[in-house]
Image (tube, rainbow, N blue to C red):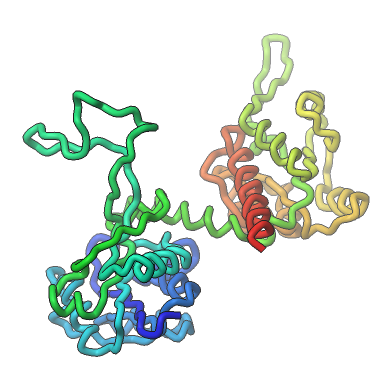
Length: 391
């Protein structure tokens, strides 16, 4: 921990584009909670502080019970035109620090390691301030037709182009002496800390909110123990592996449409050592044929009580229901989804199913939902493996 490295999170009330933005729930937490938790988890700050003019925001932060200090911000520093620098300079008057790390709540994708590595860079390179950004390999132009970052006559291949760093506004580290001298967050010897590509998105408009929330949800699931404990993945068929439609030929033969990407997802899951089972209430030879095509040995047809069968399967395999992941979309899947360790559903599933599902895919049934969920399970396995190597 740095003796006098203080984290400051400005949290003004009165957001216009997204009302109550700083405390609005995103991926299950108030927006500001994501950066506050990351800052505390980094372990490099002697103190984490918010600056706010809102009692409501202060109450929400206090209820998080993170030990965050609240600085009351004067009204003249909480207007639409007040600068971040003015809030930082107010902190100079009220806080004892050598380095001030100003964190934007609108960048909730920041990780504890980002703070740790940026501060390490600051110390090792004897920097006075740090700005964060992400690398982009786009070509930029001025309005007058002048290129900014490349020579059109020597246009580089993308793989050979170093690109440039785009400031992402996640956080800034500033020595006290620099802030007082320049009245600016950046000055003296400035360093750039490069963050992951997904952190390029800042929440300024409602459309940004949706993008970031999806990223946060996926990131949260990557380290969820429920995914890491899955040994059996059970998949419903109609409305899950298919779009739920029934197709008939002129001879009256019923057909079903499957998605090849879903099939690949199930194949990848099986390669990781997770058993896969198909379970349907229909007694369909088409489903049996699909299971054979995919090399899935556990295929259960005409099942009227899925939960009872699921209990028998897990007992036979020597596991518990907590080791089961279940993907379903309709009411006959409900009891199984309530009982297992992890449940998921396509986004067009029945409302009762969506209410109990741990994860709802962005894709619909038969159109990539199963592949999306398989990818989620695989990413958790990769995260667990990575952590094992680190230890």
